Image (cartoon, rainbow, N blue to C red):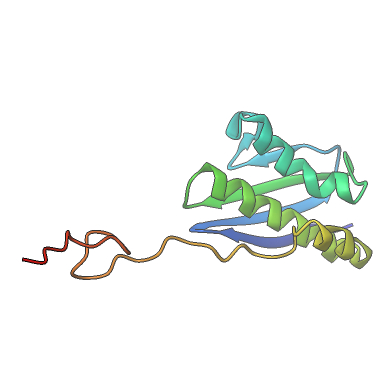
Length: 128
């Protein structure tokens, strides 16, 4: 199998994911995923697409992530992995879609409006 490239996004994070045959190692920005994402919930999110498709330990993942925070980056890498697995085998799509791993989460920070303190917060109203 040749390398499979895919893209994942979440908030302002963009992850470029490369999937190739291997032993199941995940590298993020040149570092091991357990070092880059130390929290167990984040590590679970990275393994979730592989567990759902029964492909744990079959592919090596190399990801490059830019922008955002840690949570957005984890979700971006997870979406990139799920998209790459669907490119390898289209039969994986229903399993991943059922767990909502194939949809990009559109939620992002609302922009600040002029004349207000934040996006929705207003200055105190004085009746008299």
